[in-house]
Length: 300
Figure 1: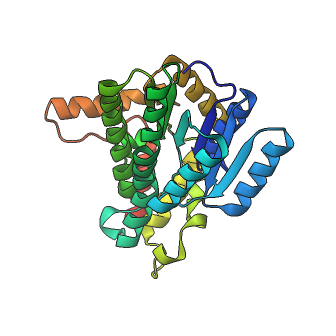
Figure 2 (figure 1 turned 135 degrees about the vertical axis):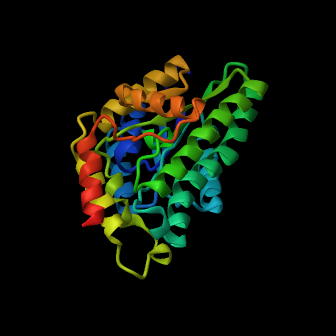
């Protein structure tokens, strides 16, 4: 996808973090925007900000874990603009702790947003793009699914999040292969950021009441939260940097997008463990102090 002016971008999680930065670049390129977010006040503020700049934009409060709400987002997009060229399945939440301490509600919340949000987006919006491509040989579409480096690694005390993001990587690779069977006009990418200050470490603020736990967080969950806050907030790469990398990848039709390419050394070690039938290595191998602090905190 080379031309963006006048095209339509749909962005979930569009009121903050990566989503808002995708919207900023899209607006600068002359795109029409459809922003979705579960946090309605932030969404309203963001939509008003872009409207004040003269951007054609609509916003719709959307819980991406709900298929009917993603369908409503697609319907609103088609009613307002008649087509969609660029889809960012970007909404995401984070949760940590030792796997056996995560509740069914933890799983429902994280998989609902991180995985089913992408599933619904792909299932509902891809046919719209393919139909547009059949009608117009010049149509170009692109889908970006936000995963994580946690979709390529398995850091401890992050199991629920890891599972959700591994699934998004697999879904995206499958989507890439499936699209290649039927069209040259619609492409996709998977975004795998590392530690970037986006606000995801505070995503509990948007957790639905019906999926909240009755019991207080466990020690491991509190430790995981503290480490996540520290790592994310100390990140040097910004959400704006990652958004620019993403648009560059869309232009180049690049599939894998990494915010921190240096982290791929750890991914390589994991792949070598698999191929060589070695037991899983330490994902913090290059930062033993992180593992030491985690062990100390969990063992008291």
